[in-house]
Length: 269
Length: 150
Image (cartoon, rainbow over all chains, first blue to last red; front, side):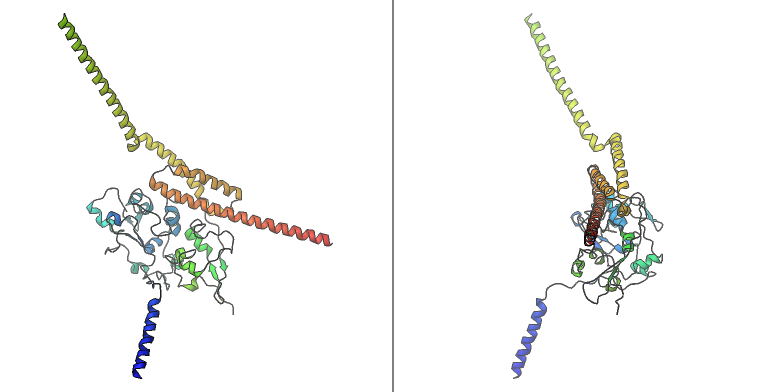
């Protein structure tokens, strides 16, 4: 009898093990606050015997709005899609637009990115960006930087919008000599989107905030291409795959786990 | 006499050889100089070439700034104004394509974004106009039906 029970138990445990092993997909590691928004770029680095570039969004977004880099400087919205070459930086484009050894930030000149001539002495300077897998000391400490800023639960753990409202960060939206001088944007009205799931609060889309930080051409038509209002259907699956809102809200802006920041309209009882 | 004639022939022969060599050297030298000038001009650029490139770049940069500075106002433009901006973008593209690689890459992408937005807004406006026309037609039909009933 005991043998039979023992055999059944083994059979059941084998079944559970089989089920567990048969599950597909991998669990994504949730990035730590200082890792959120980190981009690793390796188009040409390793071919040139350099470590891939590690780009930290948090420090850059505290100084510039999204549009400055993604519209005026011309960075693509996906890592590696810009096809940045050292020569581009050395000629004063992409990273070299600001990282040219001349621009001053916080009273210090911003270190130059790639240069046309390379010496062994430049190694340390190169490693400031080409730092993937290396232990490189940064000028900016995330914890020190984030201390005075209002906190949030996910992403970088910071409320960037509130930080700007409180004047704790002042992201510039114009880069002299690079940005095309523009008129101030007409106020765009916020609008509500109805979710398909019953009981789920409506999404209040802050058109104002998005246009101030992004401009129009960053989202239209590349990310949101539908012209007819209400015609395009957005699903959470698509969004989590990086489409539409997911282009930013899975990578840099607050993540999808922060449901109530989009689904924010109170549900009527 | 025979000796003199032979000496003259030899001198003439030498002179002819010298002339032929001189001509070959001269032609080679001229060809070399010409080739060097041809090769060095685009490589070095020179002040004239640089000035020319700078001037053409400056002219398209001004046009680029004028076009792309208006993206914020895209919604306020008429269909004709938007179509004109798109046409200007299309005209500007081949001029930017003549720039050096880095500049070309950056500005073509920026131009693509500007043009894309204007085309997007134009499509939206066309759709709105079609809707309005359809609504007007419906209203006219309703009026006509009401009049018939009366």
